[in-house]
Length: 296
Ligand SMILES: Nc1ncnc2c1ncn2[C@@H]1O[C@H](COP(=O)(O)OP(=O)(O)O)[C@@H](O)[C@H]1O
Ligand SMILES: [Mg+2]
Image 1 (cartoon, protein in one colour):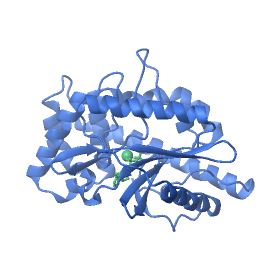
Image 2 (cartoon, protein in one colour):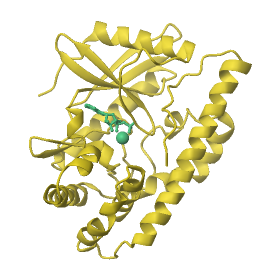
Image 3 (cartoon, helix red, strand yellow):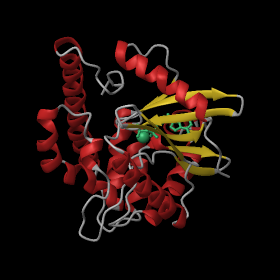
């Protein structure tokens, strides 16, 4: 059930994004969601609405094609494991400079079915059943070379099925534990003075958790704090620990969240400082749309 990305409309959307970057004013854009990494924009067309996730600008076609190959492989491997992934198409355009702007495009799914939202509104029975289905998926998919970023904001419950949304950062490792993703490119929204330090010292620890069921669950539970859903932690811990060889404790979840929140907050602040530097001091366009401050 794939679909064709409406080319002219997407090109137009990207023009709007470029204008927003130049003016640092994104009010004209229709934002579907803010992730930690990207902004998701809504594109309405005669053929329905789409969720368009802007990727970092690729310096050349080769870097883009490597990404495209990785994304295809990631989608295939997740599908082979029986995960229901939102149909995803990759759209790109070449700038006069030879750089490539690209978007991961999905059909827009109903935002009221986002699991982070349903966890607020549905009853205990749904919540318990959700978490048991969630544990099934994570337990089946995650392995040392195939990762999942399983936060509640990355799933929709559509027609009784959990659909996974967040594939823009394909999480795959080779047998020597090296990230297959172009980590350098995906960290390019970090200020230059941080990039190398972060890449070397943090990337392993940032990514490790995605390749291990316990790590994925700890990340999911820790992030419930951010969604103001921490009241669910005790019941979820009981459900999760019934399946884990080494149980997760409530203290571990709280400590994990404190560290994770601190890290993202620091990164956001540095990005904002970097944007200011680009725009005001160097009078250059800052190439990323930044999410608004998150209350943590
Ligand atoms: N196909 C979609 N339809 C509707 N909303 C979406 C879709 N994909 C993503 N979103 C919204 O955008 C948010 C961020 O998307 P996601 O793919 O998780 O990107 P990120 O990598 O930035 O976290 C989601 O939490 C959701 O609110
Ligand atoms: Mg996400």
